[in-house]
Image 1 (cartoon, rainbow, N blue to C red):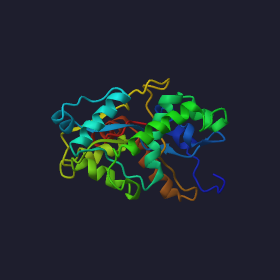
Image 2 (cartoon, rainbow, N blue to C red):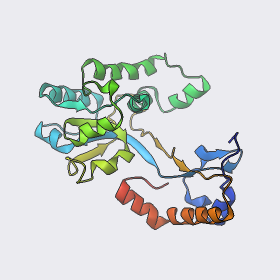
Image 3 (cartoon, rainbow, N blue to C red):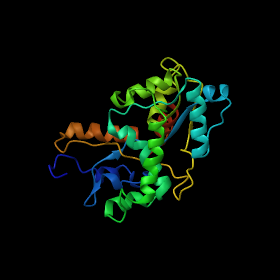
Image 4 (cartoon, rainbow, N blue to C red):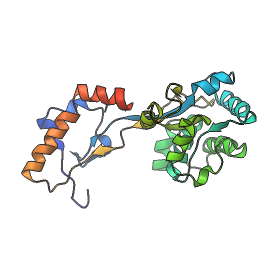
Length: 249
């Protein structure tokens, strides 16, 4: 915004009657002006291989203890409990973010921003201690810290890992019969409860958006409006949900 390169979409949104059609513009609003249109929503959670769990007598775990018990059984049988490729740090942060919300409560996120919460608080450290358990017990695929993000999906799609913590955006390749070896066996669930004040919460949002250059020509502006009109209508949003697994904006 400081570079003044993005188009203010506020008048276009009003012209097309879309202001009340979106859940929120908060992430893309600066000084009352809207500069982005959310592409879609997302949630993060635990993907699981239904077949692997069933073959090993495991039900989708509802608690942390059940999850750890399942991981121990799987590892003992030579099955990787969790697919993880953590060369990019944000991939690790997905699960730890969910864990500290579980142990410290949903207000912990805002607390970290305003300074009322610290990384060294006992309920925050509890989350990292649980994550350390996964590392210590070698429940992740070997060499995970050196692998790029796509490798965890490849591991999971090959049927070589029972669980994978990821976002709903990963759904598309996982259920693609031409790309995935487990397309008919993919389950998705909220991360299990850990016994903390944040149990049950789901991390999600609308963090990706379409933006447009402020330097659009008149013809390009017409095209941009046509794109927005075509993209943000009920039939298209339903299609996006059914075909891509992306929640409407």
